[in-house]
Length: 125
Length: 401
Ligand SMILES: Cc1ncc(COP(=O)(O)O)c(C=O)c1O
Ligand code: FES
Image (cartoon, rainbow over all chains, first blue to last red):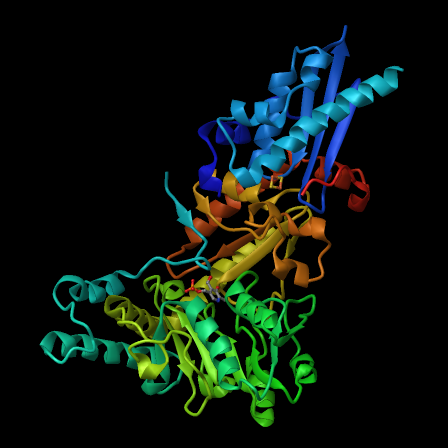
């Protein structure tokens, strides 16, 4: 299974971007379940409707870590509306593909980002 | 990069002596062991010579050894074959909840066609109690199947005790000794088994060859019907190079059994002692009643596939029982059988040793392991919560799997 990971996936797994905690985030999204072996947490800072900073923390497989890293890269600098539209296919495509059995991990990344955006909107309203 | 192999429970390096012994049987002595000419008789001789060596490793008679295509086939033949032989007389099979799929799946299949299967549970130490097996026996029990050493956690089951019970009740008793034969003493008479599976590639022999010990007088039907090879129990032209290799591997394993076991025991104990010093690190399965070749840990707050691949990047080959690494995205049934909460089964790491591993390799692994674990923990929201004293059961988002 692992051998079917692309070079890009392995590279981001080894050197993930935007990994870590964030002080005073404007929105936090956490999805997954430790019983299933995956929990993903995305934290965002928003200025003028744009994601200016983003961080993630992930408990999960190689694909989960790489997709987390990828979604943060894709979302950074985007408006909330643009970021919301990012799909699991966008994430998987940017990684040069994922093994079919691992596609749900990219769901998790897209869901965590959406949850963070929702959280931001809820807090503001 | 220098690579370190600590996944010998999956498969092992073929011994150079074994390769040498096998080579003539590809391009010089390539006859069919059933043929009457000289090519046939040299193949036959080599096969019988190997049969004697396999028998010697487990204290059996050569005529009680049936060569197969591996551990999986041996397990299938033992279970389906004894069930078929008792067809109409009984429909109940007893096994445990930590068996290899090569035992569990034939049982599940027989369950689908009408048999009743009792899966006896092991304790938190990964060991089944003989009295629990005894309590499961009914008038309809046709076969009891219990593994000797578990492939994931290395725990050793009380086979001799169960053997006595099975003998008293006159029930066929099968033991999957794929992980123990050639590593710890295995004697079919001391263990009191009627059937015992072994595989070549776990003990520095080739892949795709195994054997089933069938005690004289055991009622069993073949599962492969054809030309009647192997006393009618396993048709198909014998895999002579494989059988020769397996024979040699068994001979070497018997010769060096004590020395190898003492060697790996030192390595294993160093691994366990040092790894358990890491934060929130635990050993899966009994420490005492365990193969000297096996260490299986769980590191809380991280996921096993990630750990495996991180170590692979450092040149260390290991394995894990984590859900994310499995084809079905389910946590290992063996780890769950230990009664662990599901979230704790994810960070498991199995290191399985062989005679080829060295103390230098162990020290290298112990040097890299803490870094791999802490790097993954620094990424993990579960670890963060654990450190803040939160209940992991409370970390709940949307269910994805
Ligand atoms: C306990 C046990 N039984 C059976 C098997 C299957 O053996 P083989 O790979 O030779 O079919 C294995 C190997 O993974 C094993 O560990
Ligand atoms: S996180 Fe479980 S398979 Fe990816």
